[in-house]
Image (tube, rainbow, N blue to C red; front, side):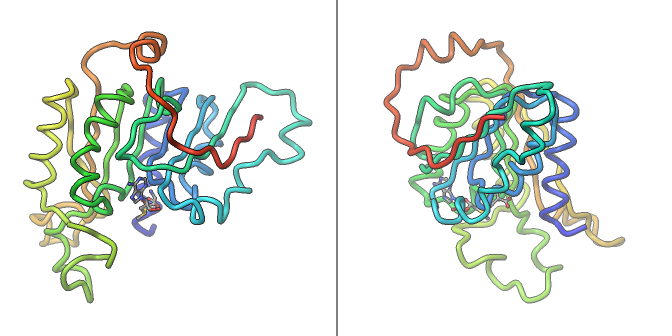
Length: 231
Ligand code: SAM
């Protein structure tokens, strides 16, 4: 399967393993991952965030309930919301989540945004689990036609040592453990370059309730809600 599908499948498998009730996808783009996750029965709250409102709106109708969703007796409640804003800013709508995913997001951040990102995601949102994926630059020589970066909007692409030192520092500072994996295996004989997409799975070491998280952090709302559906 194409690489993006492998990344989404990785998240679906993680959802199957940890059964989070509330999942937020940061840099959700056209909401494909959110759309896939709405079929996971453990999830009761799904939220998406992107700095680009137009890409988020392109296919967001897919997140609306179908007539059949109203005819069947609801086994679970599901609320889906989309928010326009930046991961460089804190907003209380992102508190209380169990899982936060950041798929191919960080390499699109400007230096100043990337600097704020750990405090916003690990310090403020502080979900039980954070997943971050980003290209592994060591794989690039195996990709046809890639000279500097895989995409012109990438601000950087890191090798494994660079990503892991950044991730370990964030984990240490905000009291998470982190494990590294990836998707996209190199061909036989090329294994030493690692995965095409590198992934860090961060697990919070300390317990935290939704209530304590929200009462301790009075923060002004800055994101704009652009979509809401209640099943
Ligand atoms: N996560 C999706 C996926 O895996 O298919 C899309 C990844 S796309 C390569 C990166 C997305 O991050 C874009 O939709 C872009 O608008 C968004 N983005 C860039 N900077 C952002 C920021 N500061 N805050 C939130 N989203 C941002």
